[in-house]
Image (cartoon, rainbow, N blue to C red):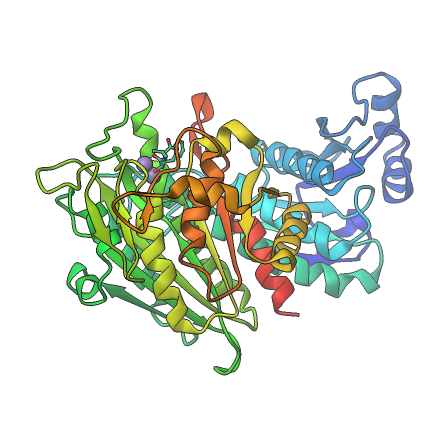
Length: 489
Ligand code: BES
Ligand code: MN
Ligand code: ZN
């Protein structure tokens, strides 16, 4: 998909679709367009065919210009960024339903910030173009779309460079989301730890700023990652620890480290999950997939920052070598862990990855994980759980969530919660009982992140949707990218 920006005369831009955001009152470019079309738009509003309400769409054909259409996109009431993103998503969905090949998006009538708006438009169109490709060859293989190019029309020439920046950024974010979605949607018999490692290596191929290395179980044993290895023990496929490095600026600049949980299938292990809906546990690698998606976006957008991505990848299975409830394992940090429930495996792989993250002398570490069912109880499928040991970092992530529409909400890490993790037989237990499950999971991780600024995103609710539209969402690539971009200054 090509994205360009233009401030030329609207009807002079060659295209077969024009997306026109407008409320019931036509203003500026919408009004001018209506006049040049002898009132074709205003008559639809007058007749009640189009109300202009937020997110409503209506496809009309331009009288006398065969095959050319205007997609009216209602904006009335869309005052927050969240509402404006929803409007843009509705416009992108309507556009992709048409046979359009070349479209113009009118960057007027909705949001004032051209860079932000162009970014959301490009991201939304890329995301709307995603189609699951069952052939798992190559990374994020998506079916070719008819739509080839989109021109973002800016009302003034002075908006053009901001719009272009926004388009490049948003397109990279959208493609990054699609990479994450494709990996998430692939079944667990294809998307194994080794498959993820191969994809991450393929991504680095020929990239000057990007390298991927992969730790084997033997490497992890040498590093004394006894906690991670206690999860992979019950599976017949070997665990991998994928380490990606993107160097977009001087080597002396401390990296931001992203750690993504990639349990390619979570059966629960010996603490076996119930059968109903267990297929969805193929999505338990979405944290890791989002990190790979972010690296895809970093390569595309070439942000001037240093980022390390660590993806501990394993299955959680119950074979004869599996860890049993009550087993005590020793993590890379030296802390011993009593595994009271083998289904609380995410924290067991993350703790060793987080200890390993310390080796990169990080500026900040953010882990991303489909960690707890409890976060769905607390925040539903709408908002990611955010927990952090640093207030400034938490605030920055919250505003990245608002700006990107990929929102998070903070929960506390008070020490009273940490006390729930006491064990009689080890330094810490891997579960804290029935209450505050998202917080106790994060308290567990916090024991391993004392040496640096750290935030945790629990995306168990937001990384995929269930039901008829079952599929991976590509979240939290947008919030992560917004944060990284804000760090790029
Ligand atoms: N991957 C799950 C969390 C999960 C559950 C994500 C449901 C999405 C939907 C995680 O490994 C898990 O099983 N967590 C347990 C923890 C419990 C045993 C303390 C949970 O949330 O039930
Ligand atoms: Mn589990
Ligand atoms: Zn899990």
